[in-house]
Length: 238
Image 1 (cartoon, rainbow, N blue to C red):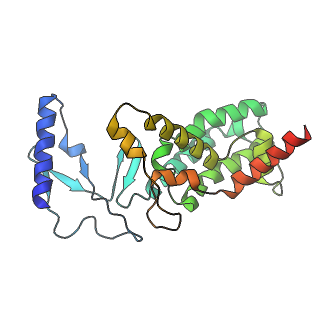
Image 2: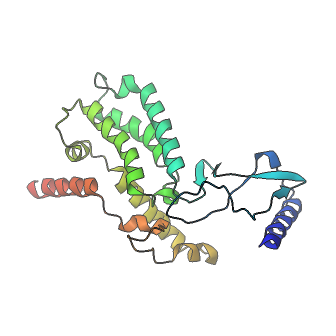
């Protein structure tokens, strides 16, 4: 295993040189991914060697941010969800005058601002982390619920499903599921055989502690079901 570590690094360095890519080792990080039910307190196993890239030490970390997605050791994406949640709350606070209860904008304009400025932050790179624990993803849905309440100046007793129906706004779970399905469908017909093989698999059962991206397609969601039920009633009535 130790030999594989150093062999992979040597091949990576050679690939950088062939393609004339400059790498800053100080901005590089190493993660040992490990599927587990519980989070380990140790960054890596005790027998894991120290890695060096271009004569510089590479730090082992619990998580790191790559292309604006925070990858953690256990691939639970809780750190990523918490980070985007705080960012969305920050943006919503700055846009409070336009999205608050006393806003003079129309509901249509408020919904557009929310979709463009806040939901994009929450759902960026959705196919990567949409299969995370539904309880963790629900923290993102709370942000949208609060927007629906403040935008419509609704009373606390109004159900979130009714507000989503009236605003014609899909739930976060529904939006992520649709985006993931589009991604898997496109990738499944990609000319690259490696990409096709990466998405063509059977997801683990829902009760299994290991979750893979395709699990999101089968995850139930009570709020989404309630919204769709109300929309079906409207269609029948019309």
